[in-house]
Amino acid sequence: MRAPSLTVRLSLLFALSTTTLLVGLGWTLERAVAAHFRTLDREDLSGKLALVQRLLGTMETRSALKKRLEDIVIGHPDMVLWVRTAEGELIFARRAGLLPRNTFEPGEAAPPSRAAGDPPRWLQWRRGPYGFRGVLVELPLGPRGEESAWVAMGIDIGHHQRFMASLRHVLGLSVALTAVAAAGLGWGAVRMGLRPLRRVTSHVATLDASRLDARLPEAGVPVEIKVLVDAFNDMLARLEESFQRLSDFSADVAHELRTPLSNLTLQTQVALGAVREPEQYREVLYSSLEEYERLARMINDMLFLAQADHGLLRPGTTVVDLADEARALFEYFEAWAEERGVGLELVGEARTRGDPSMLRRALSNLLTNAIGHTEAGRSVRIELGHERDAVCVRVENPGPDIPPEQLSRLFDRFYRADPARTRHSESGGLGLAIVRSIAQAHGGTARASSQGGLTRFELRLGRADCEAPAGT
Image (cartoon, rainbow, N blue to C red; front, side):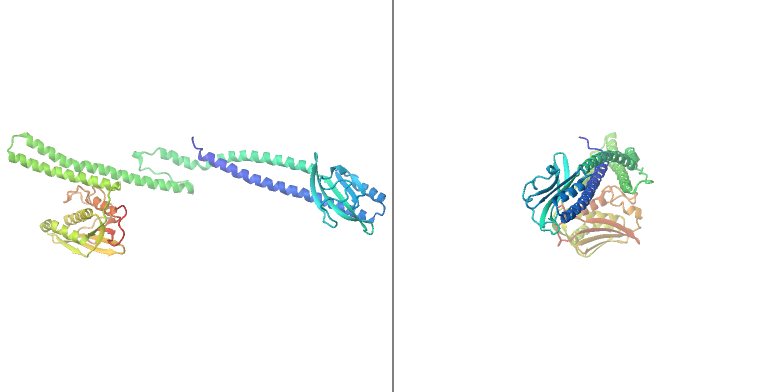
């Protein structure tokens, strides 16, 4: 089932909110009008009751009292009036059949559940189609008040009830029509408000991999959507950079693979061009073997980085003495360093947890890179130390400063700050990328800096006395 659009949802929400407010307003208005009518009726009945009370206290004869009570109800056809003594003598009755049931009936000695001196009891009742509001009270009878009389008085409030019914009908109809109008107006307002979002959507629909350099326009965009536009433009910038790196990576892979394949093809063609001595064929095979090994190393490095990208590297938790690993690598590179006239220095001690072979590979790549870029007569320095809960491994070599725009890309695959220089590790431009992947697999970081004629590569790893790195 297709979900309703945002425009429909907001329109319905707007209509629901408006309806809720109007229902609440209508309920409040109805209560206020009903309270106003109730107050008016009680004021009218209180005035008539005061007049009846004065007559009961001044009239000495029953006939005179009855005549004056008849004068009160003349001109009020909707009034109910009933007066009798506490002993049950009926003094006056007007429309007594419309009095409320279960309160008192003509001929009873006294109203049930009423006692002399009680305050007036306000009542509201229905008899058939008629609705009434009235009062029941005991008043003194005679000039000296030696007797008492029960007085029941009420007025027909049917006109009030009809007005309230009509008011409720009008309010209900108004609320319904207003809800429909609010939904329509809300739909139009939401469509108008979402117009900038539709423009952004239509612009996004035109983007593809060939137009990643395009950006969403920010002019005239509301603040709420500008946040989305900025985030989308940032995403496009990251995608453009990623696609560019992927394109460069593909070109670099093709270039790196083409060289050994071209060498193998050329050597094979030369070998097959004429009949040669077995020794010559052996030399061709040895040369081909070197190219095969170079290809194998490159493929293994690429597989290693692919595993790192998918989080498949799981370093162990062995305690590794980095100073011992550095000294072992010094012995391995000693002949090459002497050939280039480069000295090797080790300062400090540090221990970490991880995979010894992976950490050895990272140090080897850094050391190979440093020796290959150090001039004769200078030294490569490995400095080990601690900073809070981290182990720091710094590999430094003197040489020309690397421009800042190149430093951020040194750990990219197949990137060379100096394209004319061949990596002596024959890693095909993947050595530093592998260093960063190994550091990240151990929960650490790798970074580079270059200033003042000194280039420094720094690894930050967990200490051996701390918890094992994540992912183990």
